[in-house]
Length: 115
Image 1 (cartoon, helix red, strand yellow):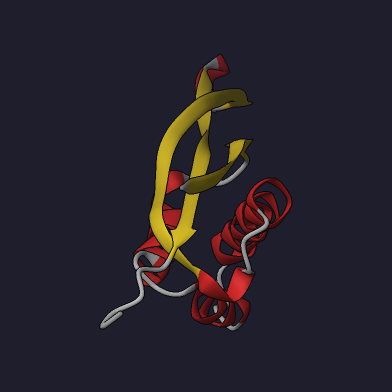
Image 2 (cartoon, rainbow, N blue to C red):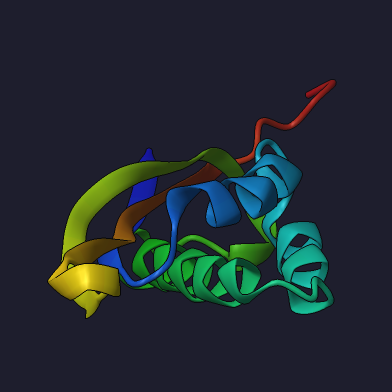
């Protein structure tokens, strides 16, 4: 059984968060949380919160021990775009595009090898 959590319209560019998602994909939850805790990226903090939420969903809905979970899916999709305008030379206005992202994390019970 998979348990997931999503943060929609997180105010960070998807490219910045994808660097952290590549680190945790396929890892055990406790190892993934340790990796994210010591990453000096803002996206790692947001991703850690979503991962903790997915683990809490697994514990409350399925009664699964968090130490038995593995990150099976971690992805970041493009969200909405916030457009702001700044004055430029000769009376013009240039758009500043601020990207948002949807962060998805899914965890599942780890398969026990050899049993």
